Amino acid sequence: MTASTGAAYTITVDGSGGADYTKIQEAVDNANDTDTVIVHSGIYSENILINKPLTLKPADNNSNIIIKATNSSNYIFHIRSSNTSITGFNLTGETGSKLRSGIYLDNVKHCQISGNSISNVKDGILLSSSRENNIEGNSLYSNGLHGINISGSDNNIISKNRVFSNRYGIIVESSNSNLISGNNASLNENYGIALFKTNESIVKDNIATGNRHGICLTSSFNNKIENNSAFKNTLSGSVVWDSEANRLENNNFSFNGDSGLTLLHENSNNRVVNNEISHNNNGIYSRSDGALILNNTINSNDKYGILLIHTEDNIIENNTLLDNEKGIETKKLSENRISSNTIDDRLTTRKLISAFLILIVIGTAYYLKKESLILKALKVLLIAAIVLILAILAWYFPFESSLYESSVEINNIQWADTASINESYTGGNLSMDLAYLEKYAYP
Image (cartoon, rainbow, N blue to C red; front, side):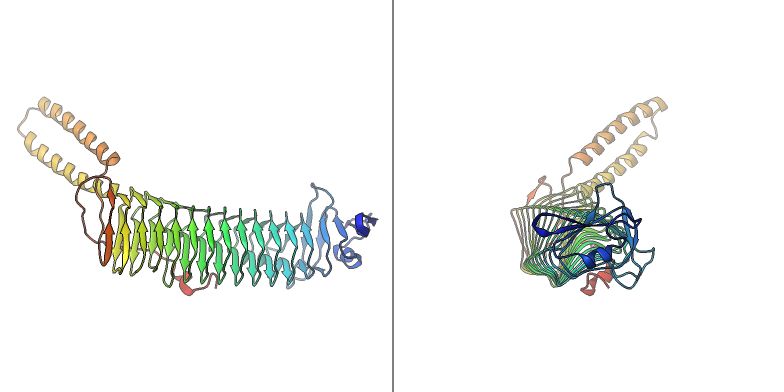
């Protein structure tokens, strides 16, 4: 045991001997406030309770410290003191373990949890009634419930964590004013990041890919969702339900299986601005009221750029919708304003050209039936060249869109060409995650 600045001591732990203690809990029990516990490489079987402000860290950057719980119904680290730092440990339960959490912050503040690897527990990191803590640079994977679970905890920073292959990624529940930034929440069974009954928080610069849903908001108010990338999720890039006055800005919701962005029932006054929403089945699917959908780029979605059903008091302005099967499709709307959007539905044009080309082929076959073989061949080559040119034009220079109007104010829409609008309605076939519609971010 050696003294350090300010009367704090450094205590060493080595399970093989030759240090102050062979058990981490022994070192913690014998330490004084603000001491540092240095742990050497090895496998430790312990459940560790920390009830005084301490720093626990490896002996050096190359240390490999594995801690397994001896009591599977408890936590590996149970932190009950503020101003505690836990850095650089590998915490694990057995596969299928019922171990509660890797690290549990229990009614504490100003703790630093960084650089840890946590797997095969229920919740990788759990915060309950804790505030102003920093959870940074941890790897949380293969856990039975959540990678990170923030419950009833305000003003925390959750940043630069890798949260993957858990049942759920990051959940923030009944917690306010948290910052969720720079995390990679991917390949989780359900959502990547979810806010549930959470207000005044910021979710920014995160990646959510390969989940069921990328980023979810349920019963949450006045949050900022910005500069995130949610792509290749099996259902949606982002889902917002029963939530109000949230801002979704400058996100990329692309290559998702159902919708880039889904706005469900009981929402109001959410802002969807300057997002890139492309290569989904539907770009934006909305059954939401009072939304502002402004300045978004919504391209190359298989069905609809924007699909609005049973909504009112929305403003859809200055969006660019290119290469969707249909740009904007509406049903049973009331008091909405759709204006100054640029719409170009490439796939509708292709269908018209395809029908035209079929007629050309049929007519040509009839016309050539009395010609000589050589003359037929020359004419067929000429017609094939014309058909090819028309096909190229159809692909690169589409000219038609469709929009159904029902109790909607529509003005100043900029079309890519002057062709007439085909105002026919086609019902959308949507594959929504009905299990999610229970107003809970998890069962």
